[in-house]
Length: 191
Ligand code: B4P
Image 1 (spheres, rainbow, N blue to C red):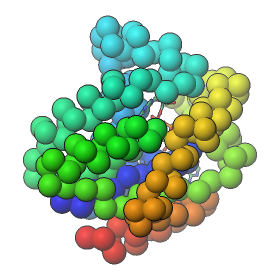
Image 2: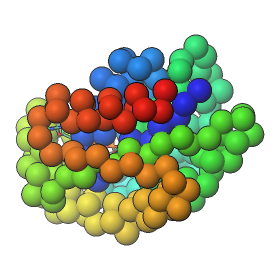
Image 3: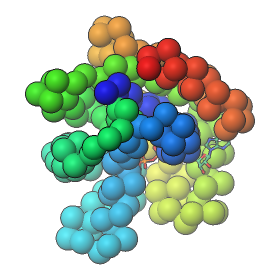
């Protein structure tokens, strides 16, 4: 199994690209954002608790997402590897993921980081708000908070992965197809 992180600020296209990459390379796509939104739509107790945190653009507690991911890793069979989307988002989550993979004789093989300009991120998220109605996309102040939270809590993972030699920056500007080609080239090198 070859395991990838797809990484980048909110609106960088992680979710958009992950769906296409998972299909092309037979990877299991695990998105903590999608899992949390599924809990909210299903009206579970967990979803109710997480909904107010997410609508402010804050991160949900590490233990919530770590538990969700562990359950999915163990129930997955028959794929070529995992594509972790939006997870990890803190160094503590990264260390937890490494431990989970290590005990299962796996590792994080590559971290693909989408680089996108700040103004482009805001533009994409405002446009998505019109289409999806996601509460965390509607308010420009919440979008800015998500970008600030990314810089403070999530971006330090880049240095952590750089030291492990798995950091691979990818230009995330341009059309969805152009970015997909760039990411596909990086993934092919690892498979
Ligand atoms: P996520 O679901 O991970 O969402 P995201 O970071 O906002 O978006 P993504 O980068 O996937 O953007 P997308 O492809 O959709 O997180 C949501 C929230 O969940 C977080 O704020 C947090 O509260 C919580 N959460 C999730 N995981 C967590 C964790 N591990 N720990 C703690 N909390 C967690 O692209 C955005 C838009 O741009 C789309 O409309 C798309 O169509 C468009 N787009 C994409 N590529 C484009 C391109 N090349 N050109 C033009 N538009 C493009």
